[in-house]
Every structure is written in structure tokens, then in C-alpha cells.
Image (cartoon, rainbow, N blue to C red; front, top):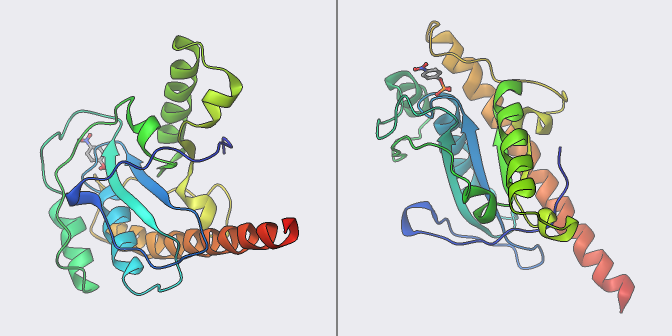
Length: 204
Ligand code: 4NP
């Protein structure tokens, strides 16, 4: 995972979520897959839902998802994604597919890939931005951090297999993964917030 410090946290009404913790620094997260109709909207829907029942998470100013490909721009999530979400009580999530853009690296602190191909794409794009803009190390550190979403689930390197061409079962497996990864990420943020508060105390 590429290490970097915070990114700007521009928010829009459709992608803003309430926050509750006072100690941790605000963050923002973008979920990325290929088509932005199966896995990344599933990740977004699950993550948004879990936030409503996770009182100690730090402020999350923006949550969104997108694809590295342009095949489905403007389309709603795959009906199998929506139906698995609905099976788990997530009924209000809405999304229209969009393609990843360079400005996402300025706007999100975390840019999380569903599989290694997506991760390669993100890493290459990030590197190109740094090179093309001739960024200093400090400037580059302010760009979004790219990583594999599955690294937060307890089994480093775990990918979310693309369920698009398979049976509905693949979507149920993806759902279970998204819950596990989201919980792991929220724990990570809480610990990071606690560590930040401890650092503050130690400094005073
Ligand atoms: P996703 O799945 O990346 O999880 O949204 C896919 C959806 C559509 C296509 C590929 C993957 N497609 O080639 O159309």
C-alpha cells in the first residue's frame, strides 16, 4: 500500500455521511473495481450501512465508488448487487456508475481496489500523476493512498473475485467479504484515531 498523509475532503450532498468521533481526523474513501456495477457499489453500500451502526468511527466526509473501465457509465448497480444488499436490509443505496478520474486522487484519502488488476491500474495512474506534475515527495504524499480493500480483512492480499460473469452466489461471497473488510477498516481508523490522541497526550 502506498503511504501518504491526508487528502482534501471535498463533499457533495449525495456522498456525505454523518460522523460521530471527536478524536480522529476526518477521512474519505473511494471504492474501485472494473465496471462500477458489481463489486465497488457493493462495497460502498455495505460500508455506508455499517457506518450507521458503528458509533465510534471517525468523521468520514466522503464515500463513493467508481470503475477503471467506461463500459457502464451512468448505469445503476447490477440487479444481483442490489438484490443481495436488499437481502441484508440495505434498501436505500442508490448509485450511477462513473469512471475513475485524476481528480479523485486529490479528493479521497483512501482509494481501495477490489482486485490486483484494479490495484495495478490505480498504482500506475498515481505514479503518472506524480511524474506528469513533477510533484515533490511531500506533494505526492498528499495524493490518495491506494490499496487493496481485502488487506483490511485479516488475510492480506485477499481479492474480491469479479462476480459479473458468474452465478448469484459470487455476489453473496462478495457481500460477506465487504462486511469483513469494512469492519477491519473501521477498526483500523479507530485505532489510528486513538493513536493520534495518545500522540497528542504524549506531546503535552
Ligand atoms: P465489477 O464487475 O468490476 O465488479 O463492476 C464487472 C462488471 C461489468 C464488466 C466487468 C466487470 N464488463 O465487462 O462489462
